Length: 633
Image (cartoon, rainbow, N blue to C red; front, side, top):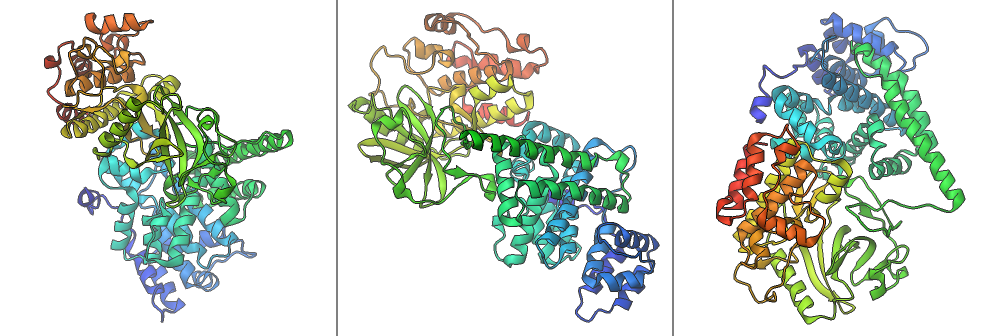
C-alpha cells in the first residue's frame, strides 16, 4: 500500500528550486547571496516569498520589494522554511475542488498558522519551521483519500467524529497504515531534517517520540494542539476532549480560556492572509474566521456556565467511559496521551477504605480498594457491580468487577465468579475484554479488566438509532472474530446481547464483555437442571428448551445482536418473558429488510440464517461468519 501511495505519479512533487533552497540553507557555510541566486530562478517562488514577507504574518513596518532584502531581514532558516512551505501546495485547488479537499486545506493552512503563532507566543526558537511542519503534517491524509477514494469515504462514514481524537489508529484499522507515517516517508524522500519529519510522524501521539529529544517532542505536542484548535468547533462537542484541550492551553501555552479566545480571534486574520499567499481562493474554502469564532463562542458559553456553577456551588466533573451509573468523581481529568484519560496523582490515604455499602453509593471522590482507587460506578447486574478505577502503580484506568454484596456470601456465586475469571483470562483477542488481575480484597472477590471508553451497543442504539450498514457489518465481523477466538478455546459465551458488546469511543473497536455465564463445552456442573441462564431476547431456542448450548447458540445471539443493530429492535420484541420465550421457540422474526428496506439482501439473509431455530441450519462456526463479513466491509 505504501508503494502505491508513494508512486511518483501521485506525489505532489515539491519544486526542485525550493528543495535546493532548503538544502543550501541547511549548510553551515551558506551565504545569503547563494539563496538569492536560487530564488531568482523561480519568479513564482520569488513573488510568493515577497507576498509572505509583506503580509500581516511578520508585522513589518515597511514593505520589502527586494528578495535580497527579504532574505537579509528574515534570515536563512526562515527563508528555507518559507521556500518549501510556499511551494508545497502543489496539489492545486480549483473552483471545482470537492468539499473534503477544501476542508483539508482549511485544516492544513489554519493549523500551520496556529502552530507558528503559538511558537511565537511561547518564544520557541524556530517558529517558521513550526509553520512548515504544520502545513505538511497531514499530507498523507490527502494521498490516502486520492489513492483509495471509495474506501476513504467508507472509513470516514464509519468513524465519524471519532477521527478527531485518534485518526491514526482508525486508519491503521482501515488501511494498515496511517497518514502520519505516509507523510514522514515523503518528507524523508525530500531530505527534510528529522526535527520536522519525526514530530510530524508522531503529532497525533507526541509521547511516542522516543529518541528525538526535547525539540521533536515539543514540536509534536505543538502540532497536536494546533490540530485540535483548528477543529475547535468539533472538539467542543466532546466534553472530555475539550477539557483536555483547555487544560493543555492553560498548562503548556499559558492560555486560560479568556486568553485562548482572544488568541483565536486574532489569528483568524492571519490564516486568511496566508491562505491568499498560497493562492488558495478563500471564497472556495471554509471561512476560517467563522470556524474559529464558533469554537471561541463555545468556550465563552462554557466559561459563563462554569462561572454560574461555581457561584451555585454545583461543579461536577465528567466521568469518562461507558458509565451507566450516576456516581461521578472529580478526581480524574483527561490528558492528551493516546487520547486516554490518565489519573491525577493525589494522596491515596485521603480516601476511605471500601465498605460493602459503597457498592450502592460510592463516596464523593471515590474510595480505596486494595491497590486500586474506585472513582465511579459503571454498571450493575444481577451478579455483580462494575466500577471505573485507577491503578496508581501503572497510572492507568481499569474496570473492577466485584460480586454484588447480596450474593457475595453464596459459595455457588463465588465459584461461578472464579470460573468467569479463568474463562475470560484464557481468551486473548483484540475483540474480547481482557483480564488484568483476579483477587480478593476486604472479603470481596473481584476482577480487574481492561477499561473501555465508550458505550455498550444497547446504549449506542438507544441514543442514535439503528447503525449505518457499513458500521453494523464491521461491528458484526469483530463480534464474530471474538467469538471464534473464544470457541477455539472451547468456551461458549451463552449471553451474547447488545448490553455485553462495547464500542470503544476513540477507535470504534468492538469488544465482547461479561463472560459471567460462559463455560467450557464439557463443563456441565455449574447449572441446576431446568434453570435458564442467559437473556431471553437473544437466547437460542435449544437453550430455552433445555437441550444444552454450543458454539452455534452463540451464533444465534450474534444474529439477534445484528438484527438489533440494523433495525433498532430485538428480533422477538414481546412484552413479557413468557411471550419472548414462546416467540423464540415457535415464531419466525420479521425479516429485517422489511423494517429497513435499504438493507442489502445478503445481510438480511445472513441474519435470518443465524436466527434459524435449528442449530444445524446456522453457519458452521463463528470464523465462517467473520470471513464472510470481512469480505463485505
